[in-house]
Amino acid sequence: MEDALGKLKVLGEGAQFEVASSSTTGRRKIPLAPAAALCSAREPGQTGPSTRLLRVLQTNKCDRGCTYCPLRRQNDNVERSTFKPDELASLFLQFDSRRMVDGLFLSSGSDGSPDAAMQEVLKTAAILREKFRYTGYIHLKILPGSSYEMVEEAARLANRVSLNLETPSAERLDEVSGEKSFFRDIVMRMEWIEKLRRERGWLPAGQSTQLVVGVGQETDREILKTSSWLYRDLLLNRVYYGAFSPASGTPLEGQAATPARRQQRLYQSDWLLSEYGFGFDELPFKADGGLPLGIDPKVAWALGQPARFPVEVNRAEPEELLRVPGIGPLSARRIVALRREFPFKTLESLKKTGAVVSRARDFISLNGRYFGAPAELLRKAGEKVLLDRPGSRKGGNTSGLRQLTLPFEWPSDTILPPRQTTSLADLAFD
Ligand code: SF4
Image (cartoon, rainbow, N blue to C red; front, side):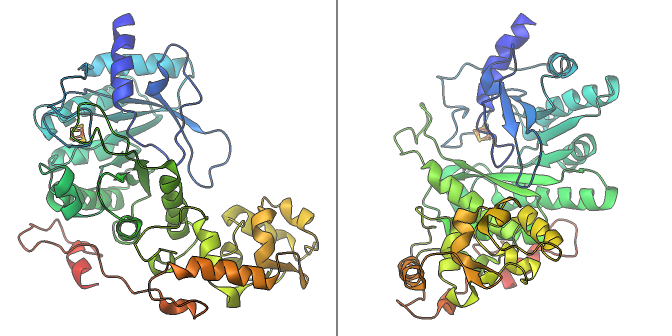
């Protein structure tokens, strides 16, 4: 156990860059386990306690040389370690039997070849499922370039699988990791996973991916355009964003860290796409392709749409309520369920639905009464936001958001994966 805990310290720390949820924290600790080995995961709309995952690598040895990654083969400053499958499975079960964790999030460096590394990951998962009949949550990371057999086995064993896209386009990936092909090694595998999920009914928690934010010169517009495509065409359940943080011993060790605020704005915009029914071209990008850092993107969007507000809470359609800053899917449902019998007349009563009234008050009326800031103030704030947007003029109409093109084209020499209802091959002509 002592030796295994020593490995857990090294391999838990090595996994800390893997994002398991949009609000992963390390505040809750597993007794005996180093804090870095635990992540406490919560998804948008998740009620109740967050999910505690033992987040760990099978090995932190890696043959690749991604410029941002401390585990790259050229970095001699890292202590290397490897779990044997039965060793990691029994360690996890000890935490599980003491109810210290709710599941396993297992990733790995690419030691040898992607398939060689995946085999060890899959052995660990198979020991848990088949030898010990573990029925709880398992999230497996699939390595770029893994064979179809490895992908299929991971999809059979796991509740969720993920492949890290890392960057929003092939060109951006080439800049930081010339050894991985964006389309062949990653996107094609994502299509396999979606097909396995759909045809076999596997992967109840679906598929996710992760991007490193700020590792290159990519803009928020590029990132969210790719996210929007991943949700729409590859039916991913979640895209995670990890702010770049320079690691010693890497070529990027002198590069500035990405501000956490940028990561937060990306998550907020992502939720507008995935949970609130916004289209990509409605997101409030500035002329330089970045999101305004100083303002919540939903508020920025609403300030640019004065004709749509205020929304009358007691009569609005659910979709209109969802567009109001401070009202989310849960509070919108509660408002609709309550308002016929108990029409909302005060901000206090609206607050009980979970709506954030300090944010909503400028965009709503309650039985015709408006409680927000003077219209002139909001107009000026809206103009300020709009000034930076492409295609907009001060005080002009807000429909000038430029129609955008896809961030990449499917290379003509790529062997396409099995045909699906929505094909990646169609993307370039979308
Ligand atoms: S393949 Fe993964 S573990 Fe290896 S260097 Fe690249 S990012 Fe790091």
